[in-house]
Length: 362
Ligand code: ADP
Image (cartoon, rainbow, N blue to C red; front, side, top):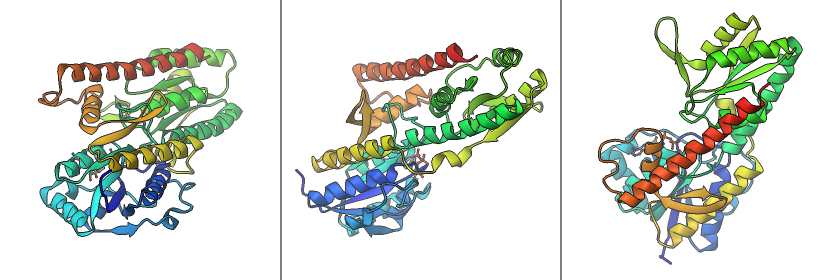
C-alpha cells in the first residue's frame, strides 16, 4: 500500500443524486485507512482556486439523503488550459494532496486523465443521471432520475385521462435515450423517441388514432432531449414540440407539451443510487490506496469493478460515432475488438428495450 497523506475528492459536470453518498463513502473509508480526505469545492475550478474543505467524518454526516452535490459542481474551461492545469497541480502540491477521486461524467474523466498525466494519480467514479457512459452498465443518479420521471408521468396520466388528452414529455439524457426509454416503459407510454433508434412518426400517429377509437383517453409520449427535427423554416429544433403540434393536427386530440428539464436532476437519491455510490466510492479509495491510477469505477453484470479511463473514453466515442483520427492507435487489435463488443452489447440492450414499447403499447 502506498503512503498517501491526503486524498482530494471532487464532483464535476452535471450533478447527480447519489454524488454525496459517494463522497461520504470515500471520505469515511479514507480516514479509516489513516488518510485525510479533502473536499474540492466546485469541481476542477475549486482545484484551480484552492477552494478546499477538510472532510472529517462529521463533515459528511447527513449528506447521504441529499440530492445535488454538497461539494458543488462547475463547468470549468480554465482547467483545459496549460495555466489552469499548472494552478491545479500547484494546489495539490501545496496542500499535500497525493491523489484525486473525481465523480462525474465523461468530461470529468477527461480532466482526470490530464491530472494523471501531470503526476497526480486519479480515479473516476461515474456520477451522471444520463447513464450515458458506455463502459459501465450503470451510473450513479440514473435510478433517481428515472423514478422522478415516472412519478411525473404518472401525474400527467391522471390529468390526461380526465381530459382525454395526449401529453408529449421531453426528458433529459443528452445524446442517450435511456432515461426516456426505461421511464417510458415503466409509465406505460404509448411511444418513446430516442436518439439511438429511428422513430416511426407515422406509425405513432396511427397508434394514437386507433387508441382513440378503442376509447383510450389519456396518452403519453416520451421524447428524449437528444432527438431533433426540422421546423417549417428548416431550423433544427427539439423534436418533442414538433411532435406535439403534429399529433394535435393529425389526430384532433388536444395535445400538450412538457419539458421536464432540470427537475429530473434533483431530489433525494433512491436506495439504488445511495448503495451503488457507496460501493463505487469504496472501490475508488481501495484502488487509490493500492497505488492504481487512471481508472474509472464501473458496474459490470452486477459487480463493481474498474476499467482504464482511456479505454472507457475511447469505447464511449466509438459508441457515439465520435472517434477522431488516431483515437484507436494506442490500442491493440484485441482491445479494439473488446470495444466493439461493448458497443454491440449497449446497442442490443437498447434495441431489446425499444421493442418492448412497440409490443405492449395499445
Ligand atoms: P460531465 O463530466 O458531466 O461529462 P463536462 O463535460 O461538463 O461534464 O465536464 C466537466 C468538467 O471536466 C469540465 O468543466 C472541465 O473542467 C473538465 N473537462 C471536460 N473535458 C475536458 C478535457 N478534454 N480536458 C480536460 N478537462 C476537461
